Image (cartoon, rainbow, N blue to C red; front, side, top):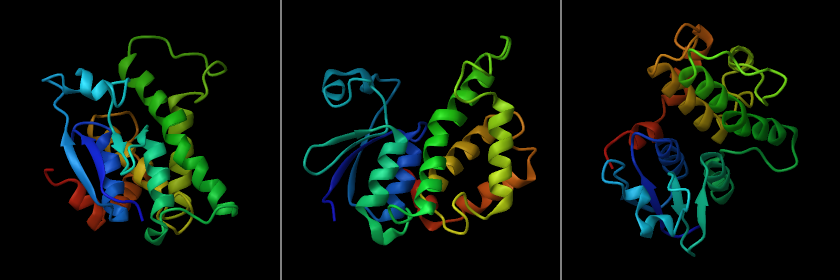
Length: 204
């Protein structure tokens, strides 16, 4: 089992998702607050760790630096197998797990960004972007969460931590269709009804 890790965190960021995952697996970690207004993420000592100046950033006990939310979640799921947050390697369920874990960053987030930040611009061509369109993405998620309790059938996984966080956040900011979808709202309620989520939402 990994030793004590260092976690760079701000609750108003994607790091909240990584903190939820840290709590799910029962990791031992030290939280280092990152104050965006003070420019902590642009200071030389932090940029030496993550030149992107972004969080979440997780430093393992041997000094290895992990960034990118999906990568952190995937690593934690494998590093703490007893938490049961990833199907066994080589199984069909593992393939579905990968699909949804990476769907968040490759489809949902860019589609959401385009929709929320380019409201007055014409949509990008569906044929030129990997996510197709925002409605395509939401349709796909809505269908998935209406068929099964979780993205990988009946098993809660790291993919639900990621997608559940994104959908909860998007709904709170008024993203189109999210709060109006009974299937999506029921899914979000299911995935956040966990002790680890409640611990992660407490002040660090």
